[in-house]
Structure formats: C-alpha cells, structure tokens
Image (tube, rainbow, N blue to C red; front, side, top):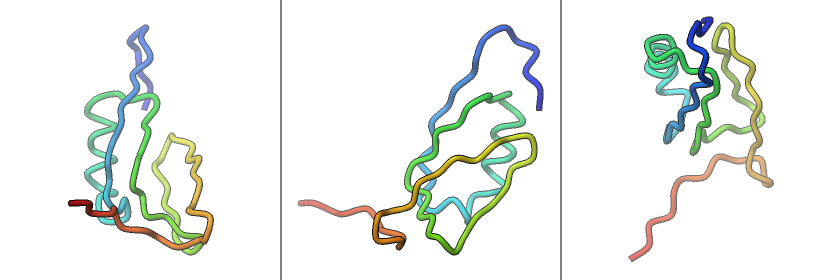
Length: 74
C-alpha cells in the first residue's frame, strides 16, 4: 500500500497474540495508510510467522523462545 501523503504514518498495536488478529491488522493498515506499525504482545515463537503484503516484518522473540502472557499484578 503506497501512502501518497507527505507525512510518515506510524501506529502502535497491542495485539495480545497477533496470529488471531491478522485480518484486523491488515484491514487497519490498508484503511489508515500506515507506513510503520509497532506491534506489542505478538506472542511470537520460533515456530510461528505471518506476512502482510507490501510490509517487511522485523521481530524479536522472548529469550527462552516461548510465548508469554501478560503478568497480572495486584
């Protein structure tokens, strides 16, 4: 998706497991002409991966190579 706007559009998305939100994420990028998207809580491991056409994915997994849920503190 090409952004014809002269501004760089950056967004942040808290996915809480990006595999379950791939379609929502793709639609959001297209509708809002996002150039760079920062995704937190992807729950990526070395076993899973996904692609979004016209975007380059750069990610980092947890050091122990497992997905981690958010910690609840009281």
